[in-house]
Image (cartoon, rainbow, N blue to C red; front, side, top):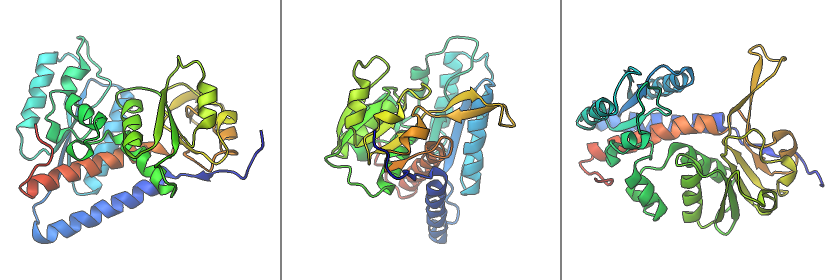
Length: 306
């Protein structure tokens, strides 16, 4: 394995800050002719999962900073599926709410089908891109008729920031989840990359990754993708967030990704760190989707129907 100069670090925090600055500037411009314009985002949380509360807090804070009406709809863990769907329908019917997300995973006593809940959100308010209609349109390449899942959308922006031409490249997506892996593969496909979806049961994972110009790791397994597998000059996007003990840290733990970063950074041309890579982009893309929804309503047209 021949080591090359260390990869350029794809700083998601810095890129997200630029996008948020652009959103704020666009908001200021809209307010010149429409002073009451205010995108409304409702974040529905069931129960008291600590990690979910942290993520919701980040979204509410970012929304407030941008001038959005970002509200936290907190529901008890004793709620039934019927009651949760009723709460979502109430938000569907609220004209001040332009985007709705259901914070996953649900933390509830009674078993609730999460898909039934995300499918209860109107597609035109589905700023998380998880409705089956959104997923279907994305898979068919009807990109302008659906919101794109926030993490894959952020990953695409990170890839574009490298300046590489996606068209014609060979991309490997490690992971097939509804939230990241599958929609990521769709977005790369419709950007004219040749895409292979891999997962934990893929027999020749190393061989496939070694051929990839673009690697997106979203499998939720600590350092499953070994650094030595990375093709020299590749772009590596690591969506993994895994916790491991680290006595050198004040918290006693540290975050690591799905890629073996210490070795991969010596082969890749570009690579995202964990933390500070994909994470900040996810929240920013949520805000971008919500702004798009609010603008469509304010303009008297709604391109995403049903």
